[in-house]
Length: 199
Image 1 (spheres, one colour):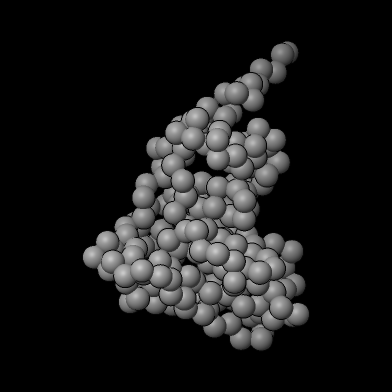
Image 2: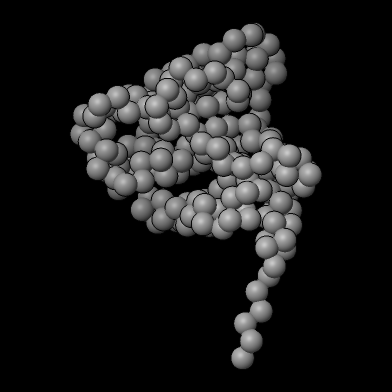
């Protein structure tokens, strides 16, 4: 028996086509044409921060909660988000159980991180342009200097560990979102993150 697998090039073509089909733009509020950025802090208590610190995949927990909130906002189950240096198309499962949803997201992240060709495509702007893959409009940044890094995306969730404390902020471009929408997204994200921690 011969096992036939797709060539790396076919993986790239299929991935790029999937992204183009599902990466629809976010519902920006162009009426709020103010320059600059605003930010809302995500309030977590000591126990919640401690739980995230114990997890080996805090980034994936934050990503899952972030994509869930974006899905609530957009009404779509697929979200196109840049995570660190990698743009990722994340599809949420229909599961209600937070652990099952997290595991589903984790598998999708691993698929790109472990697949050399997909990782290369996802990390290279020139290749993304060649395949006409849209640029993500939302970003998750976890790590040192996240809170003070220059803004490049209309919507960014930034998290930074300082000692054993986690600081999380939702940054938004005032030309793209009004404050009330950004505040609603922050509240929803906080509630979703707490649901995942308790689940």
